[in-house]
Image (tube, rainbow, N blue to C red):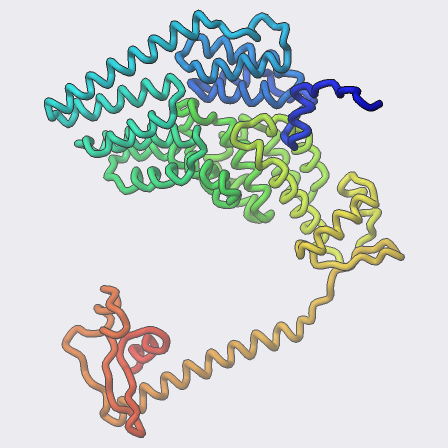
Length: 479
């Protein structure tokens, strides 16, 4: 009927209309137990993500976040949490901004900023490097606690010119990495990881730092969708991580991120050697036994059981602050790899058998296979009349002939180079270099032009001999 206005969309309908993630089923974790694995700002960040994404837990998560925020100085996130709660449950008592608390905290934030700034100016006037460094750190901590990440990053970065010991650079870099992970600025994360690795450290410092550097590296690779390198970083994380960096990540997260990234990017033998037989990572897997079961099923070619476990925990991963935007892509990679691995032993398999093995309808299986074949992920053909999937025949004879021809060409080139070297030597046209010339220059990395010796070959053609690239290494072996 014309003129009739549609009722306004609620919070969840608006998110769906924008194509954003909405979780309608409760996850498997208990929210209070889950959030107790973390500390600091990441607790609130994770609660806000759950509150804005998970319909069954939204109100509980947001009320917890608001209570935590009222114990901090982060007014902007407090306002955000209250507004989000009001859009979901407008009648809740916490869905109204406490203006008195906001005014009191804002006055304190401004007052503290002025105090730290005045102290920093005083330190600069006295020209004491250590005091200036500590002044920038205090100001950065103040900005970080009050939610101003941009100014916190600037203050921590200014500490660099006043660091007088490697430990100062180390502490500064770790602070910046923590801020940049929260901002999503992973280019800076990688840059400061390299700075830390270039520092001279004791064995004790190395052991204490390695877990943090590995998880920061893993998160950086994960953000760029480089799941193989992310898996290697998480798998290389020592089990001494514990709760030492739970303001960024927990040990449970390492097990989940490392496990599913490995499933998405590694073949079965590599999963066995890098994950299941990894004594260090086994301690992390004990915290999340379902990840170990999924990897074990995949290694044992029980693909449907593996995919069923992952599907059961999908809602949990959609509520993870680092994993949410990668879940669909990772799950698609794991499923595609499972289908390819399932098909490897067969020349021909029925669509019915494949659909039964993967627990899906035959029509859906056919559409999925067509998409994989078109994308070049599966080398096969589908016989729609007989409902068969047939592998493409490869001409092994042509492949062997091609490899043999390449080997013969390589041998011919090597033989020609040796013959030229022998002819130059027999004709007395070899120019001897200074004593010690040859392999030592090669080890020192001198370029080819500096290592070669120019002589006159047959027919007056100038030729270069001595130690160099290509066949030069073979010449050096001739006597």
